[in-house]
Length: 390
Image (tube, rainbow, N blue to C red; front, side):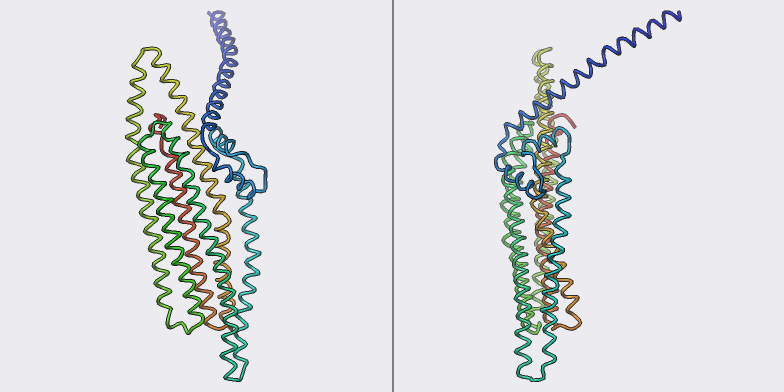
């Protein structure tokens, strides 16, 4: 009995030793087939408009970047890419550069504001008001120049997010349809068009101009005694906050509700089609069903890779504008704090108001980026149920 048991164990060990290399080889062949299928599906996508974004990421990180096809393949096959590390490094460099530049801007604005204290040293009542107006005008001119550049950066950032969303519509809709998520594709395309055509239009053409108008009112307030425009400035600040909050809340709710309603419908439709295909022919139908599962699984990986790449591109587009706007808020706040003890109170109010309006600009860019990122996350979450993989 002992000899027979030992012989059985030895035979099992030999069989296991023979089967393990074969299993490993089969696993490698399966991985190779999956990689080839992923590359084939990526090659069928029209990614021409995204090539420029990939080049922009490369210029931002200062390293030779993969092509957009290779970037998507990295996310699809490995679930990550080495590029985000470079983006975080570039974010650190951008933040340091903006802080250095903002230090010079703080010194210039604070110096211009403190010069207004010289009016108190002039004894002549006729010269004192004129000198005060001239010095205050110099501080206002410098502030207006900085604020105008910040408005331009915010407007360009919002427009860039809109162009990215618009260029993503055909790519993402085609991927959802390839997964059998017809309802999700029918929901996602109008949602993206609503984002790029309506929401971002409202932010860029209504909310941002309101913040710019608030900055102009701050300048007028600095040139007057502040009794004529103070309440109007507060009203503009409230209106921009309310408008931005209402638009973002409505869009977030719309995205969540539509994403939840179409998922189950697509899941039932695709499962019914796969069941009918498997039952069509007893053996061949099961083989075709397995092939469909493999192709749809690869399509799901490609879809997730495209969504991750889109979020990465969005991040690369908004890193610099957000850093610039943050530095602008820092410039105005610190300048107001430094100038308050001795400078003309009107200039201090100007700096404080400009900081508040720059914060509104920052909120516009950040909320637009959040809405766009949420849409890409909805795209990533779509299709898994319909593919029968969740």
